[in-house]
Length: 158
Image 1 (cartoon, rainbow, N blue to C red):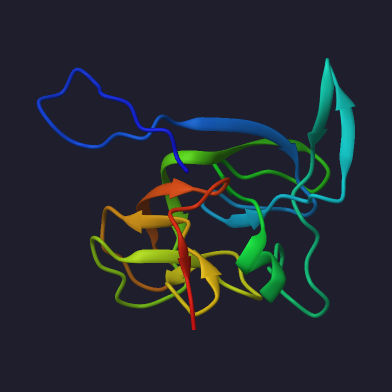
Image 2 (cartoon, rainbow, N blue to C red):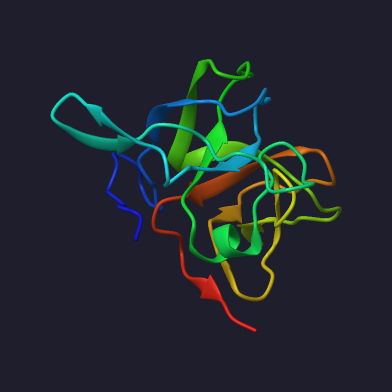
């Protein structure tokens, strides 16, 4: 699960931001939630690492997630626009602005990546809960989310 630590604040849960550099499989824009390609492994420094975002599912949008990815994948959010094949910085844990693929997300909503898209929606059955909304927003808005694309916050069952 996400690592939380006490900060010099009077109260509250804060998740430390964790960012990684990945090669973009396609042109991406800030806020897109994409899968991390767990089939592309490279030797980096002193160990192996996943180094790319996932390619689109057949017939899907850029970064489209398959149902299998949504239930068991690793996820990251683009912090800036990045061209296809270029290296970009992606947040895998922490607070981040994520593209909403649903009208009416509200503060506190648990969110999951969506199969066939590059944003997040209210949790759907058989999916990883990758975050909780900290701000409200509509379809195609950027919403602030407490995000954990590595371990998630749990799983939404049927």
